[in-house]
Length: 122
Image 1 (cartoon, rainbow, N blue to C red):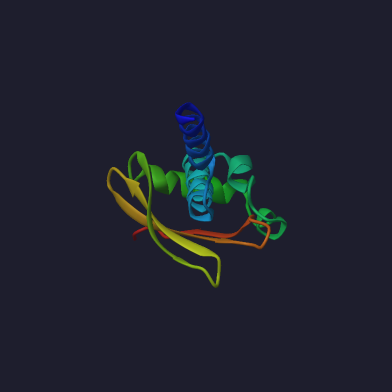
Image 2 (image 1 turned 90 degrees about the horizontal axis):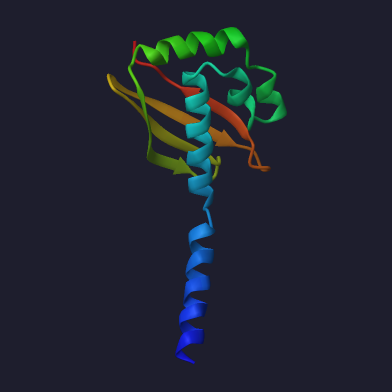
């Protein structure tokens, strides 16, 4: 009996560890887009965008933004700041060697990125 209970707890624990939340999915997608911009990879930038947003992404814009991000040093990842559940919007802080920049991501009802904005310091 004790062995069955331990096995059940192990299986349940593994299932919980494999679960992801909307907040962690949002951060993973936002981080992926930010890394793709930093690496000047336009295809990866638009990979999880909705149809309307994909049409707005140009190679030149991604390259220009990549150059600006590189001036901030190495990309160190995102830090969660806040979210607005009514708008399905999440705000993060992108961390670099030489500073930070706010990143705002909004998702559509299908979980695709409907808006991505990174505001760089002047």
